Structure formats: structure tokens, C-alpha cells
Length: 328
Image 1: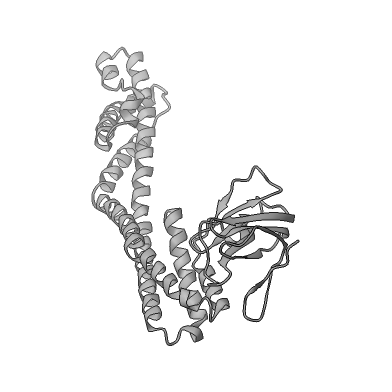
Image 2: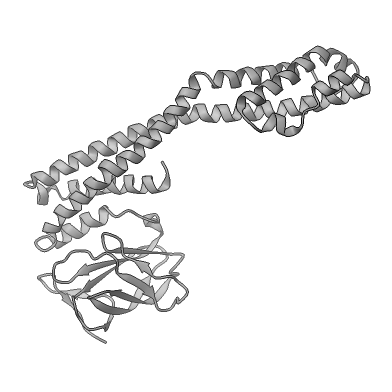
């Protein structure tokens, strides 16, 4: 799969597992469970398309390999025959095999095959004499060129249809992502919003599982999760900067309110994160740790129209899940 498609595919697999892991919270939510089934079926379809694509890719690779062999051998043998023709002053033979390299390596497959065939016929007619004259050529090598030409012809038959199927499978993957996978994921996330206040931990866990990762989870040093402090819903489009690294571009929180910073970006140490969102103000969070061997979760609750503030990591929450923010 292409990287962007694979990330979405994997996010949906993780997401449906997240729902299953919290089945007790969703047992009566029939619309959500129905969407989970749709998502599972869509993922299964994509897996089928990918299996077909990988199977057909084998034929495509064989065609490329056989063409490469045909091109290399036809050019090498053509130069030997041309050298022999010059030595015996056979102008007709010299002209016959006097190809430019691009005649044998560029253009359509059929054109390359035709020119390679000319070289093969000329070599077969003269190979015995060339061997006798001490040229670095054998009948087996010339026969091998004929075999490679035949292999390309064979590859262009049934496998050509398979290569077309490969393209069709890729197009089907793209269509499945656009028409089913991503819309179903969005519908599930919309339904999950109802759980943000009564079951904030479940909401957070399942929302996180649906995140489309830009980097592998094992590479994440700090995961910043930006949330509305009242509604408990994740906030997209928040800007996150690292004060100690002014050259690092601002990162924008995803649809699920997440910004992931890699170990490469944040070597082990403590950092100051600045998180801002229009109509929510700015929180500057001091002493946020980054470790070389694990991920730090940084929960950032923003309140609408609140003043800018500076706080210490971590922000704590009361028994009702409301943030307890102590300004510095």
C-alpha cells in the first residue's frame, strides 16, 4: 500500500480494536457497533485488494527483470557482432547490428523486442565463426538472448492482464479509502463525542486508537492531546511550538487533537511547550519531559476565552475530570 493509504488503513484497524477493547461501554450503542462492522468489512476489502496487488506485482517485476536481461544481452552481443563484422569487412552485417544503445533500451517494449530479435538472428548466423575466431561469445549465450526475448513475449500475454489488474486493485484501494473507510471512521468519531463527558477515559483511549500516525508509535517522544476543558472533546488546529527549539516549525493538532513529536525532534530532556488556539488562548507548559525510550502523554485542556497562562507539567484533574491548573 502507499504510505498515506496504509496509515489510514492501520488507524482503522487500531480503532476498531479500541472499540472492541471497550465493548462493555458500547454494548447498547447499536449505531456505533453497526459502523464498527462496516469498518471491519472495509478493512477486509482493502486487505483483499492488497493481496491481489502484491500477487500481480510479481508478474510486473518479472516483466521488468526479463526486459532488463534482454536489453543488456542484446546490446552486449550487438557490439560483439559489430566488431566481428568490421574485422571481416562485412558492411551489410555491420550495418544490420549497428544499433545505438537507445534502440535497445528505450522506447516501447515491442520496439526493443524487435531490435533484440535482429541482433539474435545475426548472432545465431555467425556465432560458430565468431567462436572459432576467438570472440568472447558462445552459442549458449546467444540462445539465452533468444530465451529472454521469448520470456518478455510471454510476460506480455496473460501477465499483462495481471498488471492491469494490479492497477485496478490500487484504484479500488483508493476508492475504498475515500468512499467507505474514512467516512465510516468520521461517523464513528462523531458518535464517540457523546462519551467524552460521561466516559472521558474511554473516549480518550478510543480516540487515540483512531489517530492516523505520521510516525511510528515507537518513535514518538511526546504526544500532546489538546482538549476542550468543558466538553472534553479533542480540539483540532491547535498550534504547538517548542520554546527551546525555535527552528522547529509549528505543528498543528490533528482532527483528534493530537500532535506527536519524535525522539529525533526532542532528545531526552525537559522542554517548554506553547499550545495556542484561536478563541481559547495560550497555555505555556513548563518542564515537559522527553525520554529516549518511552512516550510522554501531555494532556492540555483549553478553556474558551481564557487568559494566557503558564503552568507546570503535568496538569492535574479533579474527581469530575476537570483540569486543576496552577499558574506559575
